[in-house]
Length: 260
Image 1: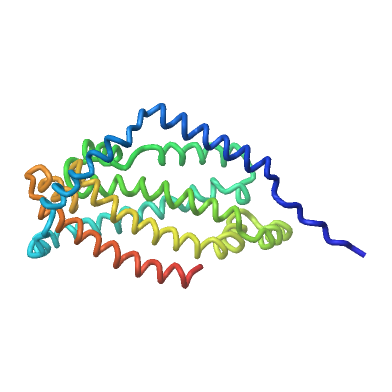
Image 2: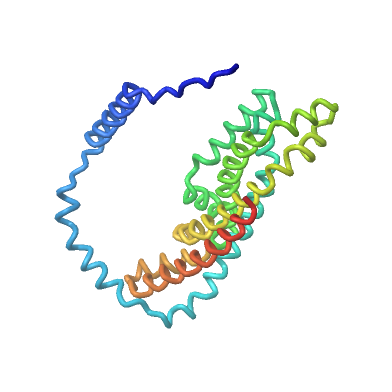
């Protein structure tokens, strides 16, 4: 007769050790960057001055920024779609339960880490230098930006799928394409679509920032108004972007709930 093993309570020494490490890291970081919260406190009244310049927003200005906002959405759609297509083969190559060769998965992950290390503004600057000012540079930056996010999240999801179908396909002698098509894709597809939708939301926000370096979209309008100190227009752009993001977030969240 099997007896269930008694569940051991978590070790207090282990959690104490983790807490001490975090405390040391905090103190080290605090001293290293020389944070002075007194300066932050004394500067709080400046927030009121800034808000007085930002408010009230110019709602009539919404009509003037409709076109660049639509350009931003188109950039996000193209960048996310192309990044998702590019992510598919790299996702499979990075998943250790799909390719057991550690050289293949290791090299693929190094490439992915390199892509994710490059800031989106730097990517946009590179593409501006290649393609010139405009939305094409923004799309190029968003392709690599979304590629890094989607691939990272999807290959980690692939590695957690049910191993049963994988073992069954291996047992019957399926080739790699059959193995992927019948054992991996059916399980990983819902998560992949959900991650693509999430990345699209992020790309909408990111594309608004990429315009600051000349990569098209609403960001270029935002930069122009900041340079001209048209703060009421800046508030209008922020509010309009917020409305668009909330709408997209609500739609994609509903779709993700049905998929997962």
